[in-house]
Figure 1 (tube, rainbow, N blue to C red):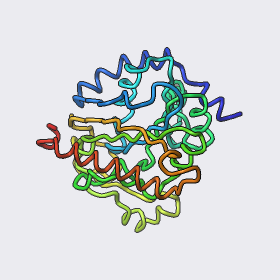
Figure 2: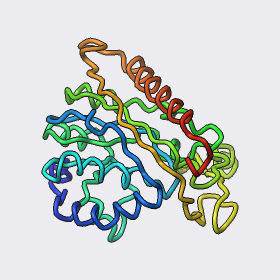
Figure 3: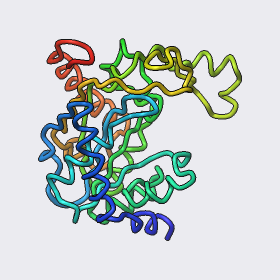
Figure 4: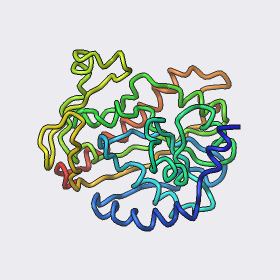
Length: 264
């Protein structure tokens, strides 16, 4: 089956080599801190649900994955769900060897049922381009498929929040209005983000500015057993609202700990 082949492409040796080469650089640049990784269940499948930050050059996975493997070792895979458009050219093979798989429910289910941990960013680009001045909100743009995935696989949802990457440049607008004005929504492009940063100044997606070294803190929250809390036939919207509420409370708590933008 195709989704089984997807998960089989993960290469623990390559992942370890990549992590040890890139991980320390990312950690130093962002002064990255990952808290409470032990909240991920020690065995069995789990769906880690996180907000997404930093625009095109998001550091989320590069910060989270090394902390995960430091805790659980490279015998336990971490799969990250990603949009199919990311798998182009030589990057395709590298991503799959690192455990990045195409974001669909079949791939997620196969990974979770194998006992692996799956990382998902339900808000995708919509979330990662949220305006800097409203960065401390959790908005998945109405996407609730992650709840069904967790319920059908019988695994807990592990909410995770990250703060700081929305300060790596000034994200001004998702540009929904601009995408509509240019007719891009017909091509399923709902946003056309506008930002300001270094070295290009104003950018409408391209050219991508380089990220400032803002301090990024990621915190893994307590797992949610959906069936135990909401019953055998949970209301998906109710579960989603609860997950987002827990995450937003944590995000605002982390925001209260920050003294200055970028500096943290």
